[in-house]
Image (cartoon, rainbow, N blue to C red):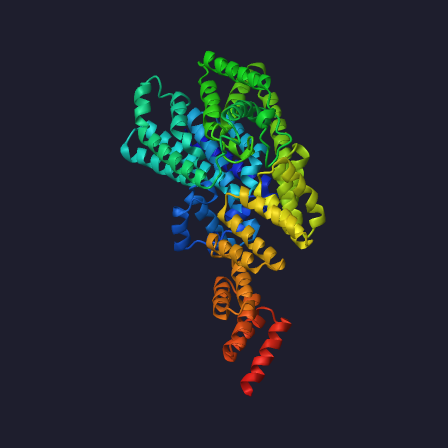
Length: 598
């Protein structure tokens, strides 16, 4: 590549980078959402410490959220250190990673193929396609853009290695691949994808035998196998893998075949996009599956028949192959398919479309004017749709209202919309959404929990208790279960059943020693029963977890009852420092101050 061409290529890469930033700029005004963002950032006590040695140690040991992805945790912790819990900073990091991915994809394609115009169009489609909004505008999906960044670096390192195979260059490929796996194991298919790149555009095959190319990648396949084993273990431990009795293999296979067709459809015509698509389970007819299978087989036959156009084989099998880990044969979560899963898989479809149309239109319109206008029209349409889609991620209310509007019987969306309405103190509006969530997806724990909180406030104690028990039955998360046990403790306390309340508070503390309300609730019962030393220990532990005016006040009450007035005064004063107009604490302080003077 001559210097003039090199300058043009880097100018195009910069333009793609800046254009991506401009498109996603509105996302900086979006907030966090109540779907996974709390677990990853806003309610994660480890991430909220920021980037510290303790956080890094936790990140490499944790299998929270049914995954082992330490680099993702470190990325979120770094954001907290830099921006606190201001969502704009967290969104900015994801947008920047996406922009880098766009520029890297362009550079890799143009170096490997020698077609700057086609490469730019593929990268531009990737930059502005609405299907990718979920991966970029959702803070919890940092793992997708981060893992793809390392995937692209691994591909770049592999291209360098392919020019002159050496151990040090191969090690760089392995290191980048390892980093990608530690961000999100979705990149597990990289060794397979590199074999496709050997076919096109690197064209190492048939110059190098297929067996040699496969053997060459054995260390990478070993990394994939290790990542798969760790991920499956983490997902089973976290309860994320769908049980066979709830979703039989036949249902999963039918949905997997159908999903491939859905991804193609939404790549071509990205309408009615949602954060969650309910699994069709038994409602998917066999004729639909047979039709989808037939279409996929015909495309595969066509790609192989015209394999002289090598990009057809690489593009099609890149799309098919890189989706295998998330196509639903091993069901993780409750979704039928997800926009985020297609983030880098659709590169294959973009390459096929751009190369085919460029060849066809190039013959029909040598001047390139018409092909350029068509490309601009398509990009404008996709960018406009992406802009609208970014707006749906403004907050939980807009996100799940839209999901309900474009899907049917969506229990997850109904439950999260109900939770969003509870956050803004509208239980009256939340109630019907929670009831629909339970009716359509009764095995969701959170809607049962949220409905229980509403019924408890309405003093419908027995009904609330039934909802909490259902939440415990279906909960696979220890922290979620701890919250439910805490609420059951408060419920039994309200009903005048202290023994059961203590049992629930104790179970909440066992599951989550950081459940502050349970320490306070159990301490209150112990105080009422005259167990002052035990109550004092519980209140003290609650204070150690986080400064709490309520815990400090009750600590002062116990100390006052024990005649330890100086320490009681200190507790009351600490409560007043947190809440200066805390009347009961002020009265307590006045009492012990007078008693001390006497």
